[in-house]
Image 1 (cartoon, helix red, strand yellow):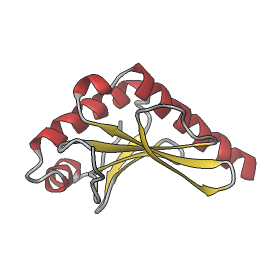
Image 2: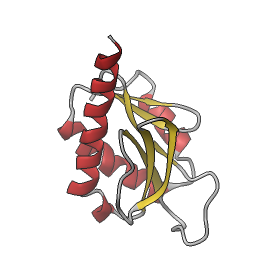
Image 3: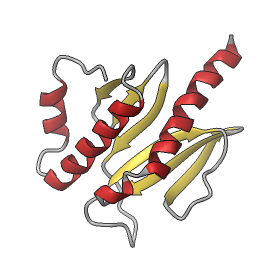
Length: 135
């Protein structure tokens, strides 16, 4: 996976004081690196964004923690053409017709599993198809 020059420095700053979340992120990053080695990642102020041709997923720290959410977790966001039907999904919104933003909480390494990776792959394909339909 392609990372910018200051990736490690930016990553450490993003997760400053959050070693458990950093460990979860690193596990997810390595699994994604195997799934789509041609993709690139960018650490931003509010999220870490994943792109192949286009943005397809993001990882962030919870800004407003809801009741019942784990104390230490990541929010993995995938864009799809449909809402995910899973108890793992913490929130869903449809910002545009047939474009759903699905937010999945990841609090343990074993939650970085085949199901989550399948959703990430579906999001990557959806982002690519969505862009091709515009052309």
